[in-house]
Image (cartoon, rainbow, N blue to C red):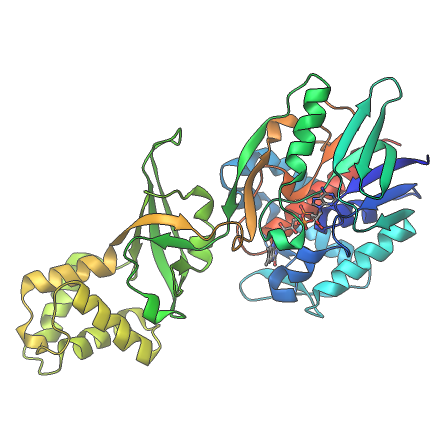
Length: 427
Ligand SMILES: Cc1cc2nc3c(=O)[nH]c(=O)nc-3n(C[C@H](O)[C@H](O)[C@H](O)COP(=O)(O)OP(=O)(O)OC[C@H]3O[C@@H](n4cnc5c(N)ncnc54)[C@H](O)[C@@H]3O)c2cc1C
């Protein structure tokens, strides 16, 4: 049986980048469960591949939730700037959108996947597809890893696990490698700490969601407050975030919700302020003055007020949104604006500034664009990505307990960790 220098399990974003990053010729194998590589990379950024974000790499750590500071050395090893330079030097021009997201100029994820695969082959890696790793063994005497897949058995001196998380399982990354790794650890009389996987970057569902009929309405700048109830081992805490919100048929989405879904559990509370930056008392005074002697319908006058303060509603949507708000706080939308009582106005302002919901769940792995949880960071060296208790075994990408915000942070981590491993493997 041929012995490879390196086997990489998973030919996704991190696996391909790792194989592509070696600076010398290697006898390598990419082992991929699917019939073709890079399924998720091809879907990324709606097929356009938002491969990183502009800005200072020092600010990146805050975009990976509670684990951000621990992965700083990995992000610094291949920064966003270094990643952009790498692609540009290799004939892939990039563009940066106004919101800071970086894409290939071609807006083509296949261009990135094709380039990485071609570079991997140049580096000496062959690709076996339709080959899910079902079992991994390690022989301390020979220091070789053996990987068993339905088509045969492979051996290597170094093994890189690049199997992704568990979100969008139809792309091949479904978490099924975790029991294989736990079995390997057991076999060696060791323990591999795995943080239970949870969907991240997913819509959030709430009890009695009132906005199903307004699906598609978005707000460029709201403030969301998440109150974690502090049960089941999770500390009680409050998290605030600002950004854009999207109403869907079934629940809340948009960056501000997706980015914080990693923290969410059923029973937590979500409070939305649609007009952050305005003080309720000022609003009350302004509305009072605006409505006094106003012969318009309540819905029309209140809608005009919201448009004036927020100036972001699509007209038709804004009318329906205001109508819903009126009904929810006991105002007849067709009543005369001047007839609204102080109490009704207060309830309306309350709803605008703190629309509170009990969370009933999230979109689940089928909808999640990332996975929180996975192999605990305590198990690896952040200098090399090698497992501390398993010499020659490396973990990269979303298999690890790292999940980033929307905007290119997940691919940046996949690439940075892949690069760190390729530099860390001593052949
Ligand atoms: C719809 C969608 C859009 C996204 N868009 C963006 C974006 O624009 N920007 C961004 O930064 N992030 C984006 N992400 C997230 C990003 O794609 C992932 O974080 C990234 O692909 C993770 O890379 P990875 O190599 O760890 O895993 P993956 O890319 O998922 O690759 C893992 C590979 O391992 C294979 N595999 C799994 N188990 C086995 C096994 N037992 N044996 C052999 N092979 C196995 C899988 O088939 C897969 O090919 C998006 C995610 C989704 C779902």
